Length: 250
Image (cartoon, rainbow, N blue to C red; front, top):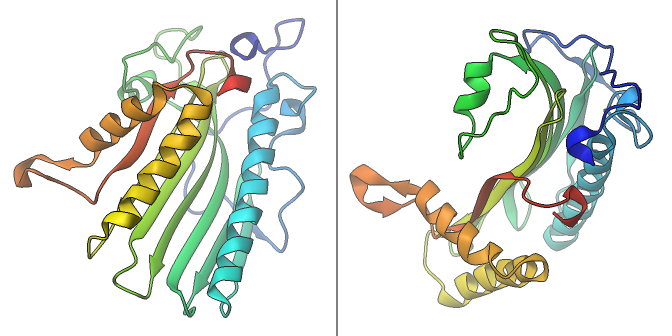
Protein backbone atom coordinates (compact mmCIF):
# COMPACT_ATOMS: atom_id res chain seq x y z
CA UNK A 1 0.00 0.00 0.00
CA UNK A 2 1.02 3.62 -0.40
CA UNK A 3 2.05 4.08 3.20
CA UNK A 4 4.78 1.52 2.50
CA UNK A 5 5.28 2.39 -1.16
CA UNK A 6 9.04 2.00 -1.41
CA UNK A 7 10.84 -0.25 -3.80
CA UNK A 8 11.25 -3.92 -2.90
CA UNK A 9 14.72 -3.32 -1.49
CA UNK A 10 13.46 -0.53 0.79
CA UNK A 11 15.45 2.24 -0.91
CA UNK A 12 14.17 5.78 -1.02
CA UNK A 13 14.50 8.16 -3.94
CA UNK A 14 18.13 9.03 -4.43
CA UNK A 15 17.68 12.71 -5.37
CA UNK A 16 18.46 15.05 -2.50
CA UNK A 17 15.78 17.53 -1.44
CA UNK A 18 16.87 21.16 -1.12
CA UNK A 19 16.59 22.93 2.21
CA UNK A 20 15.43 26.20 0.67
CA UNK A 21 12.71 26.74 -1.91
CA UNK A 22 12.45 30.41 -2.90
CA UNK A 23 11.42 32.71 -5.70
CA UNK A 24 14.72 32.09 -7.48
CA UNK A 25 14.67 28.28 -7.21
CA UNK A 26 12.63 27.79 -10.35
CA UNK A 27 13.22 28.21 -14.09
CA UNK A 28 10.58 29.47 -16.51
CA UNK A 29 9.92 27.20 -19.49
CA UNK A 30 7.86 27.67 -22.62
CA UNK A 31 5.96 24.46 -21.98
CA UNK A 32 5.86 22.21 -18.94
CA UNK A 33 7.07 18.60 -19.42
CA UNK A 34 4.51 15.82 -19.58
CA UNK A 35 5.07 15.20 -15.89
CA UNK A 36 6.61 17.36 -13.16
CA UNK A 37 7.10 14.33 -10.93
CA UNK A 38 10.55 12.77 -10.78
CA UNK A 39 11.01 9.77 -13.02
CA UNK A 40 11.63 7.46 -10.05
CA UNK A 41 8.28 8.49 -8.56
CA UNK A 42 6.23 7.47 -11.58
CA UNK A 43 3.47 4.84 -11.70
CA UNK A 44 6.05 2.05 -11.59
CA UNK A 45 8.41 3.80 -9.16
CA UNK A 46 8.75 4.09 -5.40
CA UNK A 47 5.82 6.47 -4.90
CA UNK A 48 3.10 5.74 -7.49
CA UNK A 49 0.40 8.00 -6.02
CA UNK A 50 2.49 11.09 -6.73
CA UNK A 51 2.27 10.65 -10.49
CA UNK A 52 -1.36 9.52 -10.33
CA UNK A 53 -2.46 12.58 -8.39
CA UNK A 54 -0.53 14.94 -10.67
CA UNK A 55 -2.17 13.37 -13.72
CA UNK A 56 -5.62 13.78 -12.18
CA UNK A 57 -5.22 17.46 -11.32
CA UNK A 58 -3.63 18.21 -14.69
CA UNK A 59 -6.74 16.85 -16.34
CA UNK A 60 -8.87 18.84 -13.90
CA UNK A 61 -6.98 22.06 -14.70
CA UNK A 62 -7.62 21.58 -18.43
CA UNK A 63 -11.29 20.74 -17.87
CA UNK A 64 -11.94 23.67 -15.53
CA UNK A 65 -10.17 26.31 -17.63
CA UNK A 66 -11.90 25.09 -20.79
CA UNK A 67 -15.31 25.38 -19.10
CA UNK A 68 -14.55 28.88 -17.79
CA UNK A 69 -13.43 30.07 -21.22
CA UNK A 70 -16.56 28.65 -22.83
CA UNK A 71 -18.83 30.37 -20.31
CA UNK A 72 -16.96 33.68 -20.54
CA UNK A 73 -16.99 33.72 -24.34
CA UNK A 74 -14.30 36.39 -24.63
CA UNK A 75 -11.16 36.04 -22.53
CA UNK A 76 -8.64 33.19 -22.70
CA UNK A 77 -6.30 31.79 -20.09
CA UNK A 78 -2.61 32.61 -20.34
CA UNK A 79 -0.25 29.96 -18.99
CA UNK A 80 3.12 30.39 -17.29
CA UNK A 81 5.12 27.22 -16.64
CA UNK A 82 8.22 26.58 -14.58
CA UNK A 83 10.41 23.74 -13.38
CA UNK A 84 12.88 23.22 -10.54
CA UNK A 85 16.27 21.55 -10.87
CA UNK A 86 15.54 19.01 -8.13
CA UNK A 87 12.15 18.08 -9.60
CA UNK A 88 8.75 19.65 -9.50
CA UNK A 89 7.44 22.89 -10.95
CA UNK A 90 4.06 24.22 -11.92
CA UNK A 91 1.63 25.77 -14.35
CA UNK A 92 -0.26 28.98 -13.60
CA UNK A 93 -3.26 29.76 -15.77
CA UNK A 94 -4.81 33.23 -15.48
CA UNK A 95 -7.77 34.76 -17.28
CA UNK A 96 -8.57 38.47 -16.98
CA UNK A 97 -10.85 41.18 -18.39
CA UNK A 98 -13.49 38.74 -19.55
CA UNK A 99 -17.18 39.34 -20.10
CA UNK A 100 -18.15 37.15 -17.13
CA UNK A 101 -15.00 37.04 -15.01
CA UNK A 102 -12.91 40.03 -14.08
CA UNK A 103 -10.13 37.61 -13.17
CA UNK A 104 -9.79 33.87 -12.65
CA UNK A 105 -6.78 31.72 -11.84
CA UNK A 106 -6.31 27.95 -11.86
CA UNK A 107 -2.84 27.00 -10.69
CA UNK A 108 -1.05 23.66 -10.39
CA UNK A 109 2.16 23.01 -8.47
CA UNK A 110 4.43 20.08 -7.70
CA UNK A 111 6.96 20.61 -4.91
CA UNK A 112 9.88 18.60 -3.56
CA UNK A 113 11.41 19.97 -0.39
CA UNK A 114 12.27 19.38 3.23
CA UNK A 115 11.29 20.99 6.50
CA UNK A 116 12.03 20.73 10.22
CA UNK A 117 10.02 18.12 12.09
CA UNK A 118 8.55 20.87 14.29
CA UNK A 119 7.19 22.72 11.27
CA UNK A 120 5.70 19.53 9.90
CA UNK A 121 4.02 18.76 13.22
CA UNK A 122 2.58 22.27 13.41
CA UNK A 123 0.99 21.85 9.99
CA UNK A 124 -1.27 19.01 11.07
CA UNK A 125 -4.84 19.26 12.30
CA UNK A 126 -4.77 16.04 14.31
CA UNK A 127 -1.33 15.95 15.85
CA UNK A 128 -0.27 12.89 13.85
CA UNK A 129 3.37 11.85 13.58
CA UNK A 130 4.36 12.99 10.12
CA UNK A 131 8.07 12.52 10.78
CA UNK A 132 7.77 8.73 10.89
CA UNK A 133 11.13 7.01 10.42
CA UNK A 134 13.19 10.19 10.83
CA UNK A 135 15.94 10.65 13.43
CA UNK A 136 15.48 13.46 16.02
CA UNK A 137 16.43 16.82 14.48
CA UNK A 138 16.57 15.43 10.94
CA UNK A 139 14.74 17.41 8.27
CA UNK A 140 11.80 15.63 6.67
CA UNK A 141 11.89 15.27 2.86
CA UNK A 142 8.42 15.74 1.40
CA UNK A 143 6.43 15.85 -1.80
CA UNK A 144 3.38 18.07 -2.29
CA UNK A 145 1.09 18.43 -5.30
CA UNK A 146 -2.00 20.59 -5.53
CA UNK A 147 -4.51 22.48 -7.64
CA UNK A 148 -5.99 25.79 -6.55
CA UNK A 149 -8.51 28.17 -8.08
CA UNK A 150 -9.93 31.63 -7.36
CA UNK A 151 -12.66 33.19 -9.51
CA UNK A 152 -13.84 36.80 -9.31
CA UNK A 153 -16.89 37.55 -11.49
CA UNK A 154 -17.72 41.00 -12.80
CA UNK A 155 -21.32 40.92 -11.61
CA UNK A 156 -21.45 41.66 -7.85
CA UNK A 157 -24.53 39.46 -7.60
CA UNK A 158 -22.37 36.47 -8.55
CA UNK A 159 -20.34 35.03 -5.64
CA UNK A 160 -16.58 34.68 -5.50
CA UNK A 161 -15.44 31.04 -5.24
CA UNK A 162 -12.19 29.43 -4.15
CA UNK A 163 -10.88 25.88 -3.93
CA UNK A 164 -7.65 24.06 -3.17
CA UNK A 165 -7.02 20.31 -3.23
CA UNK A 166 -3.67 18.71 -2.46
CA UNK A 167 -1.74 15.52 -1.80
CA UNK A 168 1.19 15.45 0.61
CA UNK A 169 3.67 12.63 1.22
CA UNK A 170 6.94 12.27 3.11
CA UNK A 171 9.78 10.05 1.98
CA UNK A 172 9.08 8.01 5.11
CA UNK A 173 5.77 6.88 3.62
CA UNK A 174 3.37 9.10 5.59
CA UNK A 175 0.67 10.48 3.26
CA UNK A 176 -2.61 12.41 3.36
CA UNK A 177 -5.06 14.44 1.30
CA UNK A 178 -6.31 17.90 2.17
CA UNK A 179 -8.21 20.83 0.75
CA UNK A 180 -11.56 22.50 0.52
CA UNK A 181 -13.88 24.88 -1.26
CA UNK A 182 -15.63 28.01 -0.04
CA UNK A 183 -17.99 30.60 -1.45
CA UNK A 184 -18.27 34.33 -0.67
CA UNK A 185 -21.30 36.21 -2.01
CA UNK A 186 -21.59 40.00 -1.92
CA UNK A 187 -25.36 39.74 -2.18
CA UNK A 188 -27.12 36.69 -0.80
CA UNK A 189 -29.05 34.51 -3.24
CA UNK A 190 -30.54 31.52 -1.43
CA UNK A 191 -30.97 29.48 -4.59
CA UNK A 192 -27.25 29.90 -5.40
CA UNK A 193 -26.25 28.78 -1.91
CA UNK A 194 -28.59 25.77 -1.99
CA UNK A 195 -27.12 24.76 -5.35
CA UNK A 196 -23.53 25.18 -4.15
CA UNK A 197 -23.92 23.22 -0.93
CA UNK A 198 -26.27 20.68 -2.49
CA UNK A 199 -23.78 19.92 -5.25
CA UNK A 200 -20.96 19.31 -2.77
CA UNK A 201 -23.19 17.15 -0.59
CA UNK A 202 -24.08 15.04 -3.62
CA UNK A 203 -20.42 14.55 -4.54
CA UNK A 204 -19.37 13.76 -0.95
CA UNK A 205 -22.24 11.31 -0.48
CA UNK A 206 -20.97 9.23 -3.41
CA UNK A 207 -17.93 8.36 -1.30
CA UNK A 208 -19.15 8.49 2.31
CA UNK A 209 -22.39 9.95 3.73
CA UNK A 210 -20.41 11.18 6.74
CA UNK A 211 -18.08 13.31 4.64
CA UNK A 212 -20.34 16.28 3.91
CA UNK A 213 -21.58 17.04 7.45
CA UNK A 214 -18.06 16.52 8.81
CA UNK A 215 -16.32 18.62 6.15
CA UNK A 216 -18.98 21.36 6.22
CA UNK A 217 -18.64 21.75 10.00
CA UNK A 218 -14.85 21.81 9.56
CA UNK A 219 -15.19 24.63 7.01
CA UNK A 220 -17.52 26.57 9.32
CA UNK A 221 -14.86 26.43 12.03
CA UNK A 222 -12.00 27.14 9.62
CA UNK A 223 -13.60 30.26 8.16
CA UNK A 224 -14.86 31.66 11.45
CA UNK A 225 -13.61 35.14 12.41
CA UNK A 226 -13.75 35.00 16.24
CA UNK A 227 -13.31 38.69 17.06
CA UNK A 228 -16.17 39.57 14.69
CA UNK A 229 -18.29 36.53 15.57
CA UNK A 230 -18.99 35.90 11.90
CA UNK A 231 -17.79 33.67 9.11
CA UNK A 232 -15.89 34.65 6.01
CA UNK A 233 -18.45 33.93 3.35
CA UNK A 234 -21.04 31.16 3.55
CA UNK A 235 -18.85 28.13 4.00
CA UNK A 236 -18.30 25.05 1.93
CA UNK A 237 -16.16 22.04 2.79
CA UNK A 238 -12.70 21.69 4.33
CA UNK A 239 -10.60 18.68 5.30
CA UNK A 240 -7.01 17.75 6.12
CA UNK A 241 -5.04 14.67 7.21
CA UNK A 242 -7.42 12.49 5.20
CA UNK A 243 -5.88 9.03 5.06
CA UNK A 244 -8.33 6.80 6.92
CA UNK A 245 -8.78 4.38 4.00
CA UNK A 246 -6.97 3.27 0.86
CA UNK A 247 -5.91 6.29 -1.27
CA UNK A 248 -7.72 4.92 -4.32
CA UNK A 249 -11.01 5.22 -2.40
CA UNK A 250 -10.30 8.82 -1.48
